[in-house]
Image 1 (cartoon, one colour):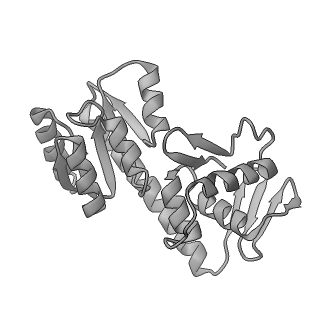
Image 2 (cartoon, rainbow, N blue to C red):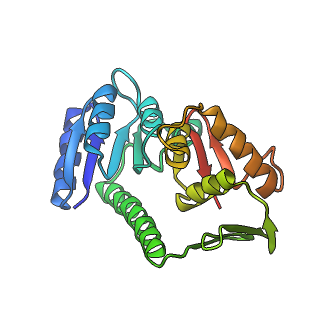
Length: 233
C-alpha cells in the first residue's frame, strides 16, 4: 500500500489522522514541524503528503514550495483559514488539493484516494505508452507524436528545436503537476548540465510563443509562483 506523510502539529489531530489512515491500509509517516517534514519527504519519498498550513518553524506553504523543487509527489494541504486567497496560494505553491478545517474524515480519505488514483493512472498510462514504443498525446488542438517527434497545433506542424520538444514532452507527460525549475533542468537537460534555471525560463518562453494564443497570458503552460511551471494541456 502507498506510504503517506502526515505533517500536523496538533497532537490529537495527528493521532486521529494516523489511526484512520492506517485503518485504510496505508503506511503512515508523521512530522510535527516543517523542517522535519522536508527531511522525511526527501529521505523516504512518500506517495502522498498531507500537509497542515500552520506549522512551527516554516509554514506549510514553504514546505510545499521546497518539496516541489525536486518532487511531483501529490500534496493535500489542510488549512483552518477560510480566505479564498489562502487556498489559491496553496495551489500556486504546488499543492494538488486542499481540505479546510474542520473536515470529515470521510471527505479527507476520499480526496486521498482520488489523488493516489490519479497519480497511479498517470504512471500506468505512461508505462503502457512507453512499452508500446509509441506515444501520442492529444490536448485539444495540440498533438504530440513521440514516434516521429512531431508536434501539431490546429492540424499544422509546429517547428520545435530538439530541446524545446524534450521540454514540452516532459511537461505534457506530467500534465497538471507542478514542476520546479530544478526538477525540469535535471530531467530534460541532465544533472551534469552547467547552465542555470534561467535556461528553463527561456525555453518556456519560446514554447509559449509557438503554442499559446496569447503568450503574455498563457493557458497551456502556466507559471506557479515561486516554484516553476504546470502544463494544463
